[in-house]
Length: 104
Image (cartoon, rainbow, N blue to C red; front, side, top):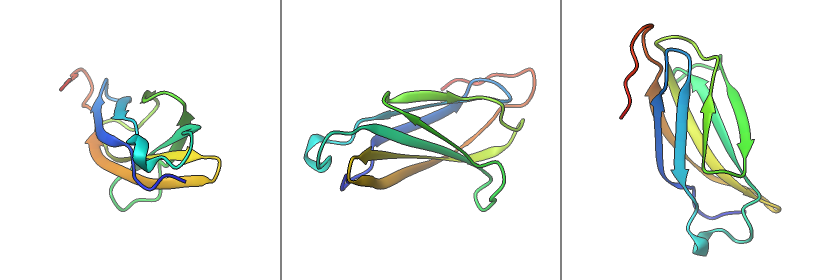
């Protein structure tokens, strides 16, 4: 399992119900094997248990759709090798209000 999380996690809203998440790979010296995939989760609100979604990807970016409008989400990314899941990196991001899109 990796000894470090992915680097440079960035997330921003694409619309009032979608978020785009992008990160840099785990540095080679911390991978402890081949990264098979990344686990990316969103959780509505910083302390809430509702609205939790998880996706798995081999890529270093993805889009979450069907989220709540104008809501804060905690986005978390971790790497997975055949020995297990490594530490995660998190960021708080908010979906947009209807009719407005803000891209960083």
